[in-house]
Image (cartoon, rainbow, N blue to C red; front, side, top):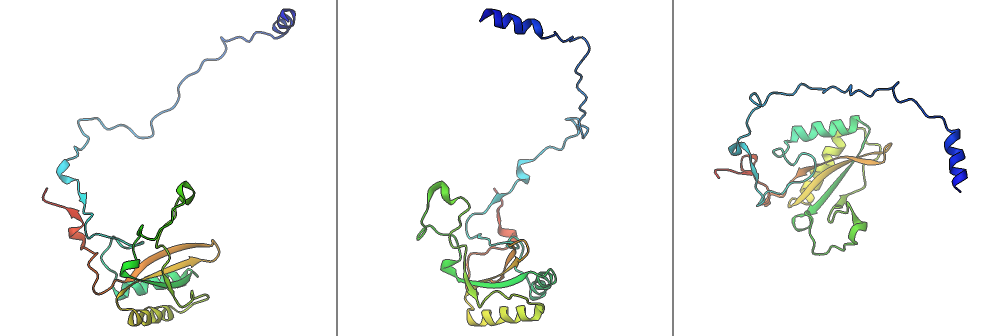
Length: 188
């Protein structure tokens, strides 16, 4: 065994290490700001999220409720992109995630959302090219279910995904929304 190791060691030539030299050539992408010039973060400028009576939904929930004109512009955007609009609604007690009737499967259920699916208002509006049809369905749903949450969802049939979802109506009796000025704890 020792003769085999000696033969293999004598066959391999020894490489010269004097020909290569490693140099660090990476440069920072941004010049570091000296510590004296860095703005100081003040603790009194930080805000604390108000967890009480401050529930949010979907895409535009962190903005004030959309006006009829803003909803119409979003519907135009959905239809002009060729997406399929779909109107959904849910009563107040079923609109939020709850653990009351949830069945968990442990780590297998990653990204599983309870109460994610609301009742559909009719079928998705496949092939809809007229935004006024979507707005008309929103009005009909609002008249039929005035005390429910309603959201407009849009699907991209090419990518096979949901591309937008936002509330078009909150119940008139909803107590779960607070204005932007009250969404953080102040005066502490």
